[in-house]
Image (cartoon, rainbow, N blue to C red; front, side, top):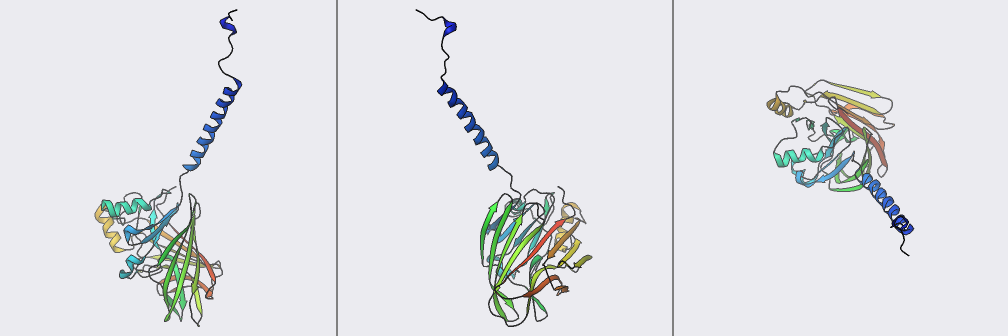
Length: 296
């Protein structure tokens, strides 16, 4: 007997129904996984061979770089260069692209920030300082680099220096730097090796540009703080004036903290926060910077 059309069996079975449910679940899980994969990074860093072996990194508040072997003939330091950022947006790659591909110097503020902090052969904005025989000793370019960890919120790398001259002695420096999202201060872990019989005081420092008004603070936590006009470097000041008539780019704020520092002072043009050090030990200090024009 012919079965009436209204009594026809459903076109799907329980198995096909379960397959559809499983497909939906897989699709949802894939969507969640994709969302996790597309989390926007808040920190970044890399080796920069196109700019004489720079090693550059950043988080939301500022960008930094240290100098590599291809720059050695220009007598660089093991100090830290500072790039000012106008917002949490990552800028390192765009700054290098503008400078080296488009020919637009990163010493000029086009709206994202600028490189206007002069380092030369100094500790810069938070570099390592060794105090020995009443003199500060600053190293040169790094010899090797290694990225230890890289996630959207945390970046850790290590630089090795083979020839840190201290009072006539050659020491080796290893510095591991950690930057994290939401943390204004970088963490620096330093190990010095070699031979030296005298007293060493080691920690972080800030170079003070003596052509402008500045302000510094020392406190019991081992902190030195420095504030200056962002256009303290005359070359950067002239470039910005020629480009947009600007005579000011706000102010720079730099901080270094060496826990339990025993000497917080101005030495050889640097603000230093150092403490007694034994070769082979790990010394930890912190450094960070920001700009008065930064906006979240």
